[in-house]
Length: 516
Image (cartoon, rainbow, N blue to C red; front, side):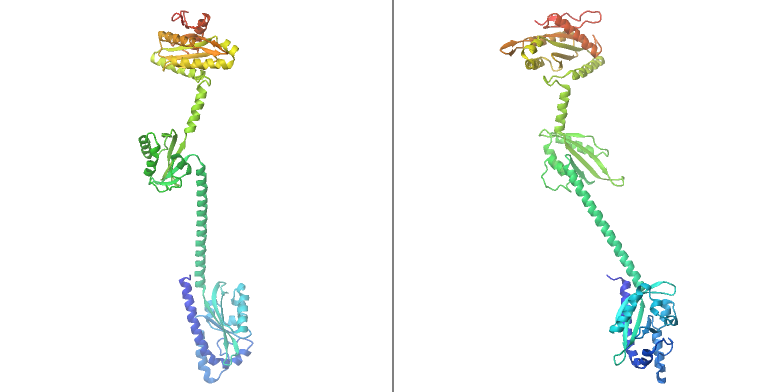
């Protein structure tokens, strides 16, 4: 699309062309008289003289003709059939700074035309002279001050009444303003194309990054939900659909959070608690604490949320919610905890958990002024069972004993397997009488058990040592040592009985009592 400047210059060129055509018709009446002088002249005549000696009655007409040519705004010249300029009007001085005499003194192409356009200019003049067909072109000239200017040139063949070629009429119009406008337009178009290409490049890169990010988030096992500041869904990955049983392929982008919550709460054990949690999270700017959501199908989903700040860090662009199904993770953690705290054979708490609970109960007892009871249990006759019937038989005895004694132990009393055939019971808020009664029940329970191996009936008994803390010992290890010593005393007495630990003056807290 042409600029206004281009349109104006083109209009001017058309008008000049029409005027020049009329001018040529008027000149043709003078051509015949000028033929002899113009065609035969080897050198340019005076630019202000009549080109050919005419008749006296033509002087006034020749003068008017000359004045009309000289008064034109465009540079106008005559080129003979040999390609030499032999007349030019005074407009050449306005456009180039060279006088007509300076231009006619030598080769006007060499003097005026820019060096890179000279060959083109000569070729076109020669082509028009040879073919006799008018031509137009644009080329650069160099002014006397050394500046370049664009000129629109028209090369018009001139013929006499008989059709013989007399030369060329050269008409040059200054189009520098149009060229500058065109250059600016081209620069603007080029800048717009560069901007468009850059925009398309960044858009393509953005789409590629979005595709890569979506692909990455779709393989993540955690459900990711991004909502804008209007609490509408902007993005959700595939894992979110799987966690909450959302219909595959259903479009949730643009949906309000309330719609999504209505779908989620149907799976929850306590929907009201979850909705209260969400309302609290939305009121705070800080990242939320992990929140475990219990589902009706037994699953546990852990949720986390935080505000997403804008690029400048000043405002926010939304909030991200992360959901993770931690059911298996919690199951494994519970299993690992069980392995760490429980005996794998009997499923009783192990020695590690025993010491943790002992220290905790002693600390609570000191704080509240209450006693803690400890029963150290060792089996009588267990080694012969292992030696005679094998370890599998021994394991069966231990498992059966753990189950039977576990039924005797009360809810607030904790039963432990310390290793091998050693067991222990911790009793918070205990008295000597209560511990004695517990020891009696345990001895009776174990002595009543019967096991059959290789067709033979097998039984075991227990020796029990009882210690009471912090009355007896205020330290966990010393309390265990006191109970062990009492247990060995009971075993030395023949087993199947219990014995209390002795205090610092070597007196027993209570007398030993047989199980029977």
